[in-house]
Image (cartoon, rainbow, N blue to C red; front, side, top):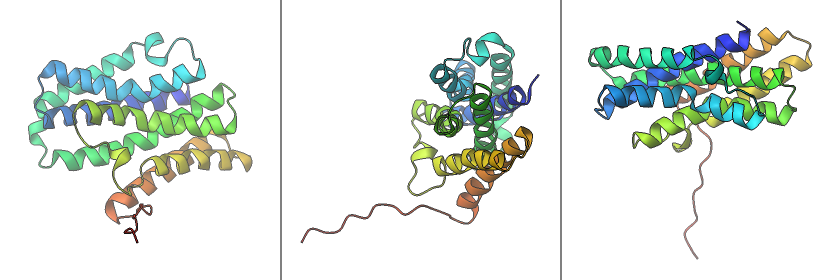
Amino acid sequence: MTLTDTLDLAAVLVFALTGALTASRAQLDIVGFIFVACLTAIGGGTLRDLLLGRDPVFWVSAPEYILLAAGAAVLVFFTAHLFESRYRAILWLDALALAVAVSAGVGVALSMEARAVNVVTMGVATGCFGGLMRDVVCNEVPLVLKQGELYATAAFAGALSALVALQFDLSLAVALIAAAVVTFILRAGSMVFGWTLPVYRPRPPR
């Protein structure tokens, strides 16, 4: 198993946990848990692979990704009640999943010799779209669209940091670790310290 495969597997697991916890907040049945968990787990990676023309899509050639996501959903179905604040758990798990998924997306794009702009774009897409699908399906305000929060920006900075690391002749492993660390630090800083981007404030008409 390659480094990017390992990162994809980790991202699938953690995103599946966030999807199942979101399903618990929506009070879905076990089938709903599995559906939302799988959608969250493979959504970003599927979009990435389709855009890159990767054939077959990662989870089609390796069904263990789906089995892992479904297993995580079943586990959460029976244990979600143990979490005192499921929303807080979702936020932190999502931050971790975002960091790992961005790194995985960058790694896959680099392995397919994509151009620099596409490498960054695939990192952002892999990190953001699974969570976006999860929140839309469960009628939650998507984290990626919440006012001023560093989410897509964190993913962008993380993906870009991998390219910068490679420009300094660092190894691929170091570059992908840098992508994950930068993404997580920015996302965590947004949650803990309130780091935000400026938001549009319309001026009153004259």
